[in-house]
Image (cartoon, rainbow, N blue to C red):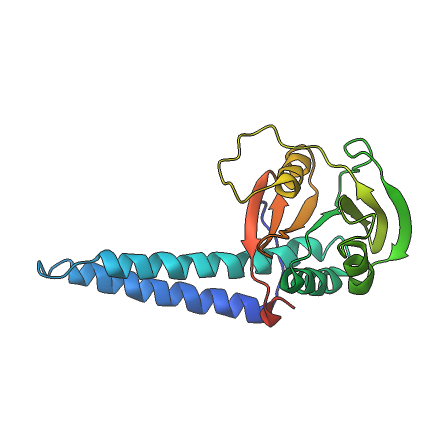
Length: 207
């Protein structure tokens, strides 16, 4: 990821506190190595779990950082994916940034509405004819829905990643777009950027 400058203080504080806690645990682990009767495996497992939690908080922090310069509606997007996650409604939302996406996606149905959480949630409501494709967000608008994104050609070993995730990776491999994905099976939320996928938290701390 490129260097960015942003400030979402609550999330940043959680990351700081988490890293300090892990640092203390690592130092305790180093000290415990001097005791031949002490097994370090349990502590390493705890450190791993703490780092995974920090990663999801950090991803939420950077999500807002990367969205805010390109749409004033980033809080609406955060609220939307939180609601979709809780309801386990699958979603795929591509946010256009500097690069135009016109030549990379197969266009769907024009919408041209101001971006709100309620509009996005209605589009991705199961049974809606537009819910299977991707929504394209351009500036502060829901520009279109039911768009088809290019799929990544990479081999995805993780079985939980389906077509939505492959499409998110495929578009971000070819552009600077940021793509939000909500899994309908698990409710898990991720965002794709520069061909990588990052899990994010879906709690009130996100917004």
